[in-house]
Length: 259
Image (cartoon, rainbow, N blue to C red; front, side, top):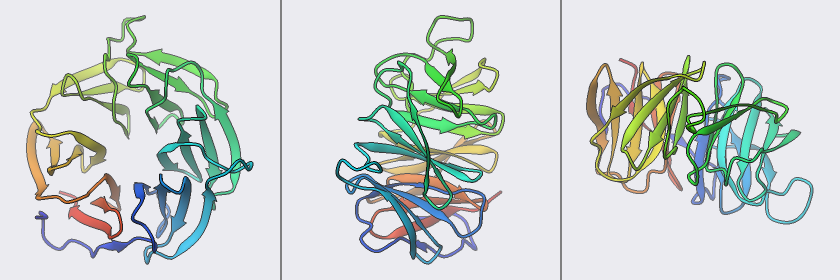
């Protein structure tokens, strides 16, 4: 069940998209980036599902990916988190390789996001706190690991960048932690959301959370269910103000328009 009226049509995925599990959308029109975790590759496609380019794949070549698990698109670049290789690969908008950023000792990297200050935040499910690196891969800061006065993020999980803050979902405490870009924890919000949270996406002044059962929106102190009775949805993204859910093998389904 989808909420809202006058939603745009579903955006088709490229052919053979059954193993696509992540989507990222930059500000440029008509470009969608997908991560195929089974084929170990990144694809860029237009709004009709036509593949424009690919990067990665199995093997031992210079462009092979070992275990890509995260994808971010911003400005004129795309970043891929390769968990097994413990690195972030930077690509240009056409998926040409630009740089490889070996990660500092962050534990096994699990999630990452790029903030408005053009820094990459990296979380590991194995240790508290987050590491922040610059575009050269240099460690800029560690936040929420108990070593400073910022506050502790005991179980960092999903990440999302929202203007002047980074949002962190703690799956154990079941709370949303808002961290200002200065490194201070602005607030902690316990959310009684049933099921496992699979994706996190800022939307219309709030944040949307995808579970295996529903999509929830938290905004202005209110938690509402935006969609329910889900089957196989795996990721969320906001595109031109509309919240879209990724359904592998099907498409990007619109859920909610701007309020």
